[in-house]
Image (cartoon, rainbow, N blue to C red):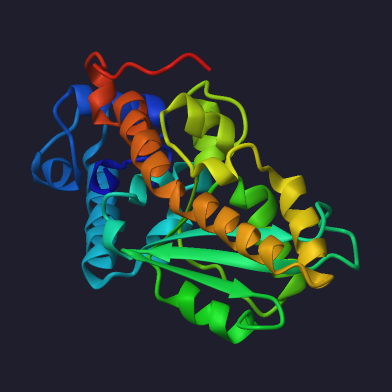
Length: 265
């Protein structure tokens, strides 16, 4: 999908991009190799060819930060297939909900990449350096409303953290698809299951469990960490489903009817 993206070109929006897909210009290579494109002057075509060649060079070198800077964040879902092997799924727990509460802290950070889930816990394994190591190894960050909460909360509490990678926010993408509700609601709608012991738990329960744990309740600790792990690992199947539909509705497949059936929200 990334190499089918033309909205990185100056003056090109979604309508032009879709028109080119209908004309058979399905990726950067097909655009560059076509001698003329209707509606473009030779000078503009040459400029676009050069820009796409540079984009391809960035991709070949793995310079995804440069590409991400040229594509608005709402379109970073387009990196998903290209970055699949290096995706980092992230979910955090806190002791409150406000970014502006000076007493607020990050209590747990769940990180999933490949077949491995890492849980970083306040006062145990959670440090800015440890977290940065994990972030630096990822090619695409995937969250659920991470642009509105997880990332700004982490940056507020750990100002040295760097988030330079592209970021696929499943919550915002789901809204574009007309799918509303929180993570657990979307999981249920899409048939993504949790362990019975975790069913019904929400963010407020994570705050409560943390407080109980700090007062010595070891069972609360186990439940909290299991809850965060479920939040983090369930992003994987959810991302697959959301990306598939985003590509069908807003990618080259959108120029032909979609065969995907979605549950009503």
